[in-house]
Each structure stands twice: as C-alpha cells, then as structure tokens.
View 1 (spheres, helix red, strand yellow):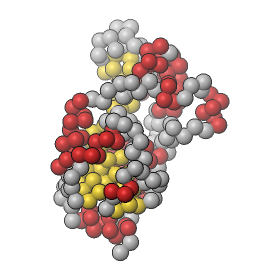
View 2 (cartoon, one colour):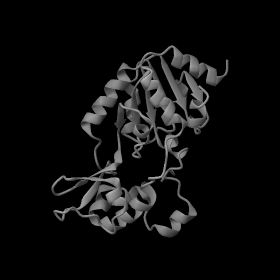
View 3 (cartoon, rainbow, N blue to C red):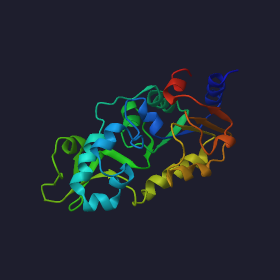
View 4 (tube, rainbow, N blue to C red):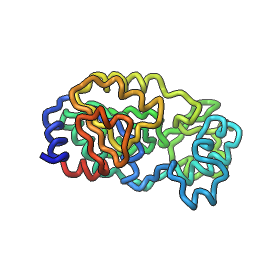
Length: 237
C-alpha cells in the first residue's frame, strides 16, 4: 500500500478529521509565499516582509505598508485548488469537522468550507480604526495611498500583523476542534510560525498526517508522512 492509499484508508476510517494548513495550500492557487524573497522583491521594497507586516510599521509608515499590501498580499484572482475543494467535500460528507488555517486569502470558504478558523484573519475583511465600519477587499484594492473611512479614520485589514495577538475566540475554537479530532492532517506548512503552530500539541487522536514539500519539526511524530504538494495529494484520494 503506497502513501496515497494509506491516506485514503485513514480518511475512510476517520469520523472527526481536522485540517491544519499553511502557505503551501495557497501557493498552488498562485498565491506566493511572501517569505520567498525574489529579485523583484529586492528591487521594490526597502524593508523585509516581516518588518512591513508589523503593527509598528502599519502605525508609523501606513502608506508604505499599503503599497506592499496591495502589491503582495491581495491576490484576488486566485481560485481554490484541489486541496481546498477536497476539504470542502470531506466536510460536506461529515468526515471533516474544521479547517484551521494560517492563510488570509479566504479560499477555503470560496471552495465551500463552512467551519474555518482563520488564525491570522482575512484580507476580505477590513475595519475603520476609528468607528469600526466594515469595508470589503475591493475598497482596499481600488483605493490609493492610505484608505480612509467616511469618518476620516484609517482603515485596517482584519489580519493579524506581527506584534499583534491572535483572536482569543478563534484560538479557542481551533484548540477545541483539534483536541476532539481523531485524525489531524497538517498540510502546506513548515510549522515554524508561532503561536499558530503550537496549537497542534492539543491533538491526542489516532492519526497524525503531515503533507508538506519540506521537512517539519513534527515529522518524527507523524503516523503518515507525505513529501509532496498538498493539492496533488488530495486530488488522488
């Protein structure tokens, strides 16, 4: 039995699957991992991504933040790939109970997933820092400079920037889902981003599956380890 068959067997015999995913799930939809520093990046930006995507930078250099944000973080033409679609299918079949994602692109919901814990928020939601009014992503994409609310307040994306805490309710929901799962599938993440990656320690189920192109710190604990693209794997089960 090869690894794909083993995964299919695990899925078949599981009743409460939770999926924990990262950037590798979205890269197959054409959304680049912003940590991949390329030549174009070096020519255009004076600061590393982690600096630009920090609370301090947003507050102090808001216009430069938005220049990067619009160029690199808004990938509005991206469509769900085989991984997103399979996860939505498994939820519809009653196999999967939750998706816990580090991504902010909303592609899980676009594929049809209902129970999604977005640990780092979503680019699709934006709020005025002064009055709290909601703005959709198109408003941000089509604005110039610093997007302002009609009340003159600065609009901020509902994403968790560096130096900011994760949402307590989102973390609590994710922890409860992971703790109750009989199978945890980790995909498209190196498990290097904390505190998000720390949530998997709450898993006490039967099957820990890791699907990732590169090694992770949890590889030795996995019941099944598949070194491949997550969409390619899910398209075959």
